[in-house]
Amino acid sequence: MRDTSRLEKILVLDFGAQYAHLICRRIRELGVFSELVPYDITQQEIIRKRARGLILSGGPQSVYANGAPLPSEKIYGMKVPVLGICYGLQAMVYQNGGTLYRGQKREYGKATLRMVKSSVLFSGISKPMSCWMSHGDAARKLPRGFEAIGKTSDSPYAAISSKDGLFAIQFHPEVSHTEQGMRILSNFVFKICGCTRNWTAGTMIEDSIAEIRSKVGKDDKVLCALSGGVDSSTSALLIEKSIGRSRLKCVFVDHGLLREGERARIEKTFRPRLGDNLVIVDESKKFLAALKGVEDPEEKRMIMGREFIRTFERESRKYSHNFKWLAQGTLYTDIVESARGGASRKTRSVIKSHHNVGGLPKDIAFEILEPLKDLYKDEVRKIARQLGLPIELARAHPFPGPGLAVRIIGKVTQEKLDIVRKSSAIVEDELQSAGLLSKLWQAFAFTGDDLATGVKGDSRELGHIVTVRIVESKDAMTADWFRIPNEVLERISNRITNEVNGVTWVTYAVSSKPPSTIEPQ
Ligand code: XMP
Image 1 (cartoon, rainbow, N blue to C red):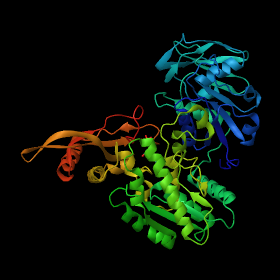
Image 2 (image 1 turned 60 degrees about the vertical axis):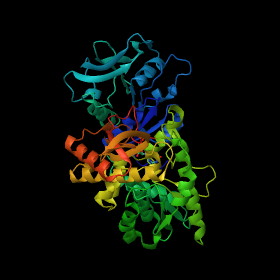
Image 3 (image 1 turned 45 degrees about the vertical axis):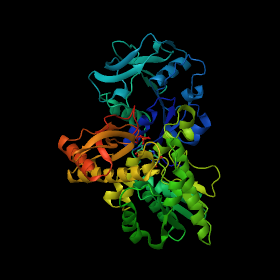
Image 4 (image 1 turned 135 degrees about the vertical axis):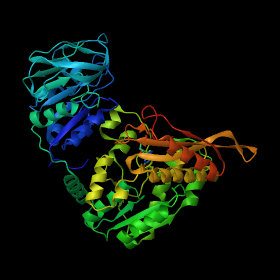
């Protein structure tokens, strides 16, 4: 973990709520660094991290359940303010001597919160407000020294506080359905914990540079995996700024599963900036051979992860000096989804083993350098702009490392690759012409083995079904399908069936994340 001891920070203790990380995001949006940590973090670790405040997240369990996750009781006596949210309220009540109703006070959905006592937590909020509830257990008797500061019709203890800087709310301030959620979090962070706003693109850059310099020795060399997306490009620029150009080599791998025109785009954008420090290698035959016949998406990711590493190892051996480090543009969200390390490891299941995280082979000839591993995509985009990357690149849609391998359901074949590549180019082209592309998180086409009947000319033809997937999102942890104007969808559909061989049907994906994911595999 980077050394953020300089920074004021709020630690979010993770009790396994699916969206615990959203609390972190909201705090960072307020301009204060926040980090998700395991629920059983020790007092020493909290002191070492110089936390200005603690937030106890929600979680799916009952505090009375066998083996329920509970924080160290010492956190309540540390003179560091604590805010419990949902399960966090229940844990605080239970551990301080109060009692709870078990499962009888179910409250789900919107409720109206009325303030019953003035509290700095509700500073600036005078009227009843709507809030989002989702809980089974609820406080029955408050611990000594606590009082109610807010209630709903079903929860007399919807918000509570103690004189010792302990606060708790039964509802979720981090979700947009809670009207004044940001105000409540802001009151906690600034008025109660006394933080100042200092988490900016500038501090993120300084902080990353300090971390890279502290890790990479004076004579160490770094090989940077450059995919041309915003994450790896920003990573490369940060490393260049930290250690200079002479000890850095950026390798772009053409693995045969790229989008149309991708390799040429890389040449154009990066050759002038990096000169000989950019190496482009064509390994498409190796990658496609390794994927031959493979249908399982997790297996595809593992194969891609392994082939990437082997390629970098081969490249490293080509130069007289050895590269100690392999730099990747891994983001915080990649780590959360792959359930690797830190808070995620204990309470989360693997959603997808992102090729550069869960897909790494065990025997690697490098140490891994991930300067962006604590950051969200929108934070990386801010840094990218500040470092001078062109706006088109800073805003570019994410493209998964395993490339089209995860946009082809079933076996990867040349026919399906051509279909996905050409159809995706049409999707992007039409959205660009309609002025929509830059407003969206991702837009592409995918296909599988399902065939449907069509008529081309006068004859019956069996062809592939292509699905168009366009989503809006802020950080890829949740996403909504894009309500695309009919006429744009119609143009996309017509062009795909007319211009792409072997396609008879076009469908539009109308599933959000959750329950779906963004990529089909
Ligand atoms: P999902 O499909 O999990 O994707 O909703 C979330 C975001 O991550 C991207 N993605 C990947 N990126 N390697 C990557 O570098 C991967 O294996 C991978 N899988 C998904 C996806 O495009 C989306 O932006």
